[in-house]
Amino acid sequence: ADHTVCVAGSRLILMGGRGHPSKGNNGHYNDVHVLDLLAQEWTRPSGQPADGRAAPFAPLSTPLWNHAAVAVESVPSYKVFVFGGQKAMLSYSNALSVLDTGRMYWTSTQVVG
Image (cartoon, rainbow, N blue to C red; front, side, top):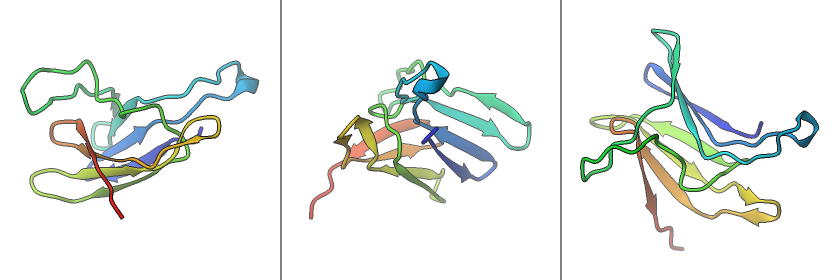
């Protein structure tokens, strides 16, 4: 619950969220899952940082729920912008993170103002 989903071209990208205590799972998530809308297959993508080393998967910078996300068409690949959300009970994020969907790698930006 409380995750976000964006459509970036032919991919649906699901990020973050949390479990529900009544279901026996109150964990908080930083995972990213991708549905290829053409092949109808889910994957948990590997990340590819600028230095070329492979990451096990492309996680959010911190577990988040109740955050906002939007996919923006960009060259050469879509960018997904994630803002705010909760990191823990009564702990809120003011961070802006950007997912490069070509490399499936997150960068954090400093917001001033």
